Amino acid sequence: MSTSESKPHAADAVGVNIHTRDGFSGDMCSTLRPNSVHEFARVVGPHAPHRFGLCSMPLRDRADASELPIKLLGGRAGLSVSASGLAAPAPYAWRNVECDEVHFVQEGVLDIVTSFGTLRAEPGDFVYIGRAVGYRLEPVDSPTTRLIIEVPERVRIATSLPFGVLDPGQKVVRPDAAKTSARSGPGELWLRSFDGITKYSTPGDPLALTQILGGEPPVWKVNLTSIAQQTTSIRMSPPAQFAGTASRNALFFNLSARANDRPPHHVNADYDELIFYFRGPTAYGAIDAPGTLTWCPKGTVHWGAEEDVAGEYFAWLLECNDTLRLSPEGKDVASLMETGLFGLHPTSAT
Ligand SMILES: [Fe+2]
Image 1 (cartoon, helix red, strand yellow):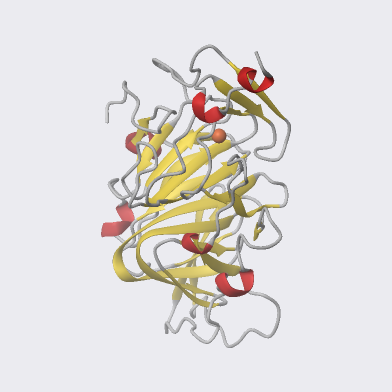
Image 2: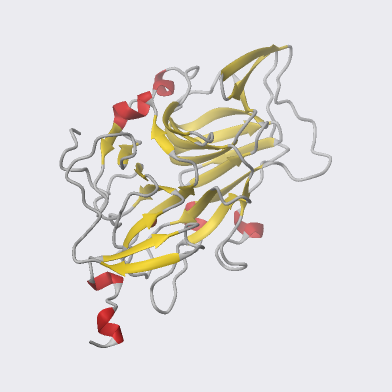
């Protein structure tokens, strides 16, 4: 048997399986197995792949703007994932005192009024709000649907290539400091910490701003469709990273359609994988509903869908070192998932 025959390519051998360290950047061992190893007949316990339909789940803050987003997943090191459907201006200003926040806008348009000016957020936008930045949300075109990632470390624009994936000068937008909050009278400021919410009543607007005297506002946005994809001449390449923490505990990638072979069966030793399907028109594997979130916990074998499709789709990936768990509310809206094409598992009730 020749060398090439003894090492089938991932695209034509379902038994090819890779074990990786440090996500896409560490040691890797590739194996060939006699059978597909990502499937499971049943599972009992908390470390199991699930998916969520963001646009079909009940969101409390859609009917009552004073309600909080619902938490879907939480990690033991502090990373969390929540969903919001705000339809009217929130009556309070918010300040997360322990986490940076990354909001992904699925539906609707919002003005994110911050203590450094205002950003208008539209579908496909990632909005970064640094730790201890005060802000208030004012829907412009509702209903809105957002996914909120809280990261207990600083998140920065950090691309996997020095040039080409993202043009920060053109595509990363900072808030308009000339467009500031103008609420008169007493205000309300809710501080978010690990143990809940602390509510301050303030004599004036806590977000009021005259001007920025220097420095860079710790708030920005970038649209998923502005981030380029990457591949290689052998069609096996990691997706394009565009943001992350210096520790590499949380990394964001563009996972939209591209010229690349289907990935092999994969054991990701160090990261839980969250994939979010923004929109088509083409499906990503078994996912064709915009706003679908998948969660594959670290160490569970998964395959994944074909990325080189006719047409296009837009999706992104978050790798997080934190080990996530479904929250009590997340259990109510999550469905068990198979990890070949990320469809519902045959034993899933919904
Ligand atoms: Fe993977």
